[in-house]
Length: 67
Length: 256
Image (cartoon, rainbow over all chains, first blue to last red):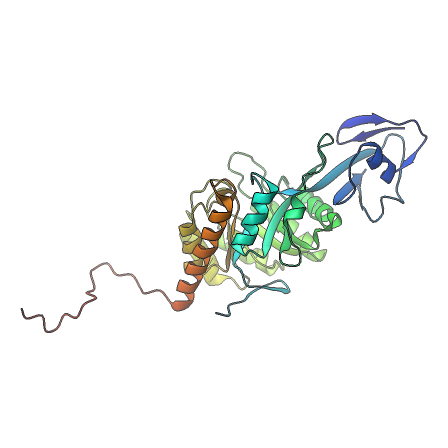
């Protein structure tokens, strides 16, 4: 699959993969992360259930300091 | 002194809210929150840096003591603000939100029309909404009417440290408001926080002035004390102003 993560294109050698696997492969700890995939919002409670398909656009966000 | 701030369905002892941006380190932020005694801390939501994913800021916040208040900074219209609020909620921030819609970067002034629009929608979705606004008393009333838990008028533009330049308008907002008024943005010195509290603000929110101080934790404490002094003065009842001198020593029996 070829997917876009925060505007970067990433390619993996499988037909599809779980969101958990995407984060693992990118070395991103899932704690506190929220993911928007084509307008749907997911958090660590359901990363395991979400399948990422070819062409998906992912936006990974997290809490940072702010006023 | 028992003087509880009731906001939404929560009660707070501290009237100093702290923003968590721009601190030199996570340790410095943690020390500042502790020194200030603050019970409300704001955070933002940003894209993960894929090369350096963990910022670790959350570890500075003790959620048994501090309410996490995510902002919608970066939103340029109502739609983006609502999306950011929902993403923050999914990220584990609960249902409170500091609504912030700032379409232009030079002054970061809030867009009143988009803010009202987003506030209506977020209240309907069950959020506790605290909107960041210019010091506009009519807008403040509109936001109260659509169900916002507080209004947060600015003292001066974000990060400018200029203080309470909107003093007269904030006074009107305080006079008319049935929800807490939190003076937010631009407070650059403890005396500014004190002034806001003296005129009857319910709380103040400070970030930059603390974060960029040489000693942030000490400055956090100074702001906390400024806010307390101002609050006590407000409750004690300030004397009225006069154009002419009013002798404080007796004027009778002066014969020398």
